[in-house]
Each structure stands twice: as C-alpha cells, then as structure tokens.
Amino acid sequence: MTTHNASPATRPAPAGRASGAAEHARPLGLRFIVAVTNEPWQDHDAARTAERWATLCAEHGDPGLGAAVTHGPALHDAVAEIRALFSETAPHAAARTLNAALAAAGCPPELVQLPDGRWATRPSLPNDAPAATVYGTLAAAALADWFAERGRPAWGRCAAARCDQVFLDEGRRAPQRFCSPSCATRTRVAAHRLSTAG
Ligand SMILES: [Zn+2]
Image 1 (tube, rainbow, N blue to C red):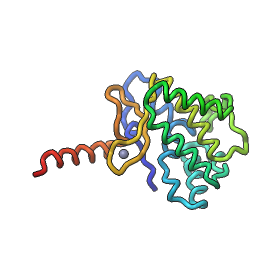
Image 2: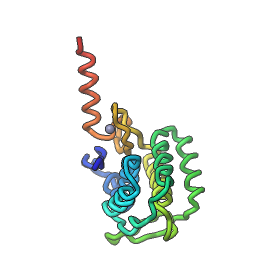
Image 3: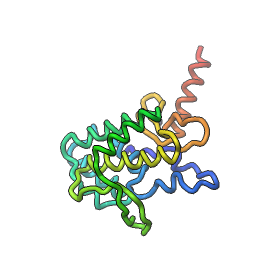
Image 4: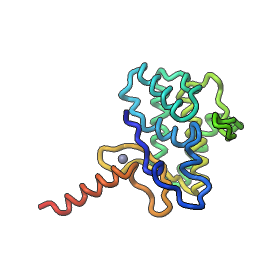
C-alpha cells in the first residue's frame, strides 16, 4: 500500500480559514483525486486495479462508485492526463487545459447530498460511467474549483529524487515543492551531505 498523505492533511489549518484541507476531505473531493493520481496503477493487474479503485472510492466516501468499470487502458490514460496537469503551474495554460477537459466531459454540475448529510455540487455523471470518466470528470471539476479558490494552480509534483507523487499546495507563503515532510527532509539531508562531502 503506497497511499501517501501529503503534508497538508496533517498540518493544522491556520485560524480563520473557512476552507482548505477539511473542506476538501469531502467525498470524492481533492483528496480522492490525489490518491487516485498517486496510485501505482501500472503495477496492478486487472483484478488488483478493480480492487484498488473500489477501496479508494470507499475510503473517500462514495463506495457506490467503486463498482465502475476499470478494465482497459482508459483509467491509465486518464491518470496520465491528470498527472501532466499537476505539472502545469502556469495559470493560463492550466486554465486552458482544465476548460478543455470540462467541456469534453460535458457533465453539468448538479447538487448531491453526501453520505454525511451535507450538500455539494459536483459534475453529473452517467450511472454507467467507467472509472476513467468518473475520475477524469471529478478531477477537472475539483481542480478547477481549487484553482479558483486559491487564485492559481496550487499543486505540483514532488521535487524529491525517486518520488513522483502529486500534491496540493495548501501553503500560504513559498510554493510547496515536496509531497510530504519526509521527502523535504530527505532532500535537505542529501543536499547537506553533498555540501559537506570531502
Ligand atoms: Zn515526495
């Protein structure tokens, strides 16, 4: 299991923030998108892919979507597309990509009541939508909302060696470069070793 919680999940939210990590812990929100994007799908066979998809949907609050069809290359392709988007931090380029994805999905927002009773808007998905469509559509909508809320494409891919995890940048100051405190520390220690070597 390589589920990798990014640092913002454990960082206490600064006072006075109405939204942020807690808000986006909602079912199939941004946390779900990050988890699916970071899942090593290429290492899974068909059975394991279906099992992991179902588990991620259940862990992120919507077990019903866990039954969506996962076979074929579509899910891999959708993950590759969203992974590429996490590398795009130029606002206009990211907006163009997201707008194209939203238009292609053609799923207008609808109100849904979440299992905990709250209401949220999210893209209307056909009942028989395969996992790739569910993920791609929810990712475009959630990332567009997050972009608008933060005023920039506040996300990235980890800068640490041998780590390719994507993350949401919930920082208030300098842009976040690492997916987790452990990757930041590992990189700092390696740089220090290098600078003091010899
Ligand atoms: Zn990392």
